[in-house]
Length: 101
Image (cartoon, rainbow, N blue to C red; front, side, top):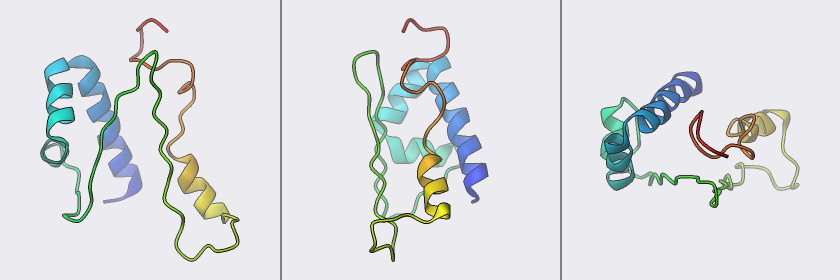
């Protein structure tokens, strides 16, 4: 599955969590099964954690070190992959659209 297709599926899952609290609880309680039911491919040897940001809790993901990089510098391609998890406003609004900041 391409990154673009996966990103679209994840965006739909996030929107579904905002619209349906019971779906969000299901995702938090049984992440792997719920994501697979929504069409995401998760290898058997991969652990997936879902964390929820709030007005007082912000979670940051520390990406794994790119294979083959020993100089401490990232290639342009690696920088694009790392930046893929950032979206505008993520440090200002930690809830769904329309929620209080």
